[in-house]
Image (cartoon, rainbow, N blue to C red; front, side):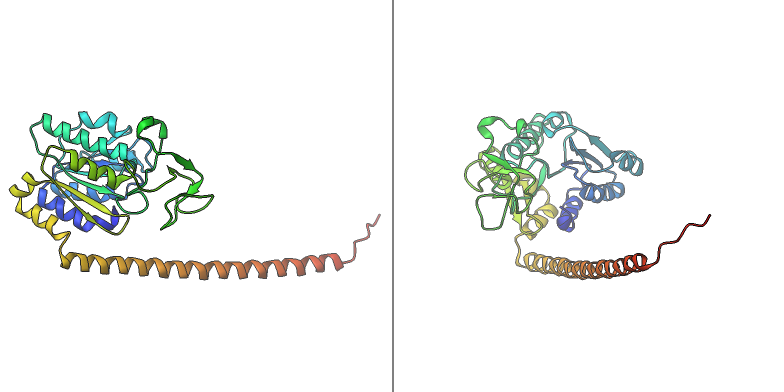
Length: 294
């Protein structure tokens, strides 16, 4: 979600959030952004991840009183968490998990007599917008699990995974893209369609995509937040966002060229060392053997 932080921050500012839930801490990049904001606004971040790459203890020490870490699944802990003002959903990227995380958030809010929390979903674009990924397929009931493979990756424009290559080929993901109950975006769309509440969903391209789900009753009561959500589909925002994506693409392109140059330099150095080693070995072989003396 890092690429989308500027508009996430703007929505945090507009909601004046006090309780933030992050589903899927990963390496902690978004977590650190959220905690930086929480430090300045007297907020608390609840982060959920059963297998995190982040150092939770170090983050706890750096942000006392601002960070609560839950080393478990979202299904296990969401019903018991405080009501969230804003949710960042970036966990298990499949229809069943996303649909039911939204359901649990909704049920929890209903029990508290509150509207649906402002929810931001990452990875609604390629490759997992219309294709399930499973960190642990056994957590997904058989009737909701797509036929999946491990060792087959994804290529843009190819509906079927490609054995032994492609993006994320070591991961477990649906063999086919598209169709019912398949992918993060499909899960979000289906929940918004089936939910009894009056929800609005907007999407932002780039960085694997971001969806924003907001309760229209909240938007009516909070003009500042409504303005931020409206902005996501405005020509001005889309043009600025396109230039931002172009800038990032250029940085990656330059970094790739520099990496290739460094690889070439190292390959040439290896060849030089091999020549030096061969020459030195030849000199050693040409040296006369020493004759032992009594």
